[in-house]
Length: 121
Image (cartoon, rainbow, N blue to C red):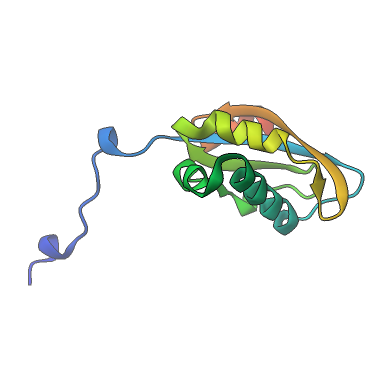
């Protein structure tokens, strides 16, 4: 068998979906865990844009970039849905029975710039 024929072909960079990274900070009375915040983000996005909009957003909350102490994190989304995600984050008021607001610190195109500019290196 030919190994080249078995390999999955990848899309060229011009045809791939572009991503953006939304850096946020959760401000609350009590510390918030990743799991609870992730659930609230999903529910807010579903309520705001519906199932079709949520699936088009292609959001991915990056677990190992969420800082429990500073309550800062990064969400990956498609370039077309950045404003929808920002609006749905602004609508979050309660996370796991605690009052909470989610403040967007910035939007970047790479994880490196997200870490350097907003997460403190």
